[in-house]
Image 1 (tube, each protein chain N blue to C red):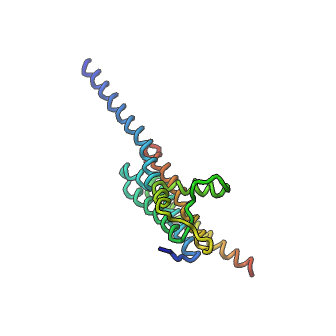
Image 2: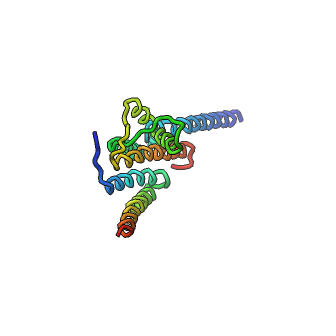
Image 3: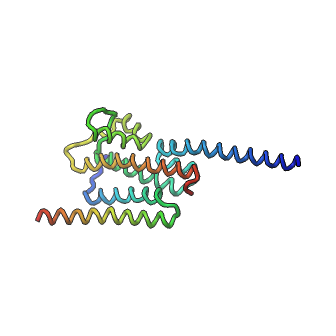
Length: 60
Length: 143
């Protein structure tokens, strides 16, 4: 079985899984876990978008 | 007086048993968590956390294989290959199953296959973090 992810989809799936583990393992209460998981996810995806635009600007 | 002594002795015995149980769990939980992602939390009745960790690591590992990522074998060659093996083995039984089934041959012709290789390595590293978390729960450092 072969999975065809675009670069962005691959980055989002990666961010979702890593954020889940970071949220659960790095915080103590459920509320804090959810907040930290969401924070990590936003940073991951935001970082991807910022890096993408930076590369686009470098190319043009 | 005898009753007080009996109660104290019984209390000490219960405390000793609890301590022994915690010591056993402190060894078993991280090992179980390493062998099967999330199991370290599940055996400590952290059902939701265990299932979410299991799901996250399984998705990363199998998505990595699906993207034709490479599963590193034991090697003493290039440093990055050695580190790749160390990351991969963090995923526990899944690694040995993948090796036994000859999954993860890699495909250098696809750009996304390189993402797959990184997915598999990171799945192993995330599983090590969750095994350490299971240990912290077992020793009472975390609830």
